[in-house]
Amino acid sequence: MALVINLLIVIRKAYKLEHIVTLEHMEKLAKLVLMTSCMVGYSYLTEFFMAWYGINKYERDVFVFRATGHYWWAFWIMFSCNVVFRCCCGPRRSGGTWSRCSSCASS
Image (cartoon, rainbow, N blue to C red; front, side, top):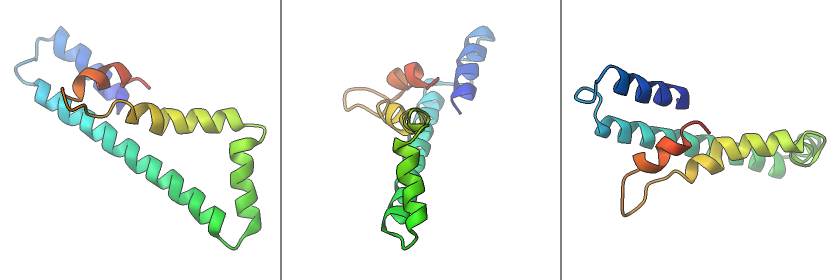
């Protein structure tokens, strides 16, 4: 999605399509990115919750090892790039989402 937004920004300026692809479209794309990142975060937390409170001890150990084991850095990069950084691009009260999401679109 972020790649599409970045390409759309370049194509919109290069071919002078500002009258077709308006800032309202960009705002809606930014809200869509925010919504999908919230859905991904919810699924990560649900997956962890089910493993933690489930009956299977091995599944719980795999999830703990995934966050603290040899590849802990990959897990936390994945979680922060998919959830944390994108949620930082959420809407403000004083302005729209596009101003911040255009800078965070590549995360």
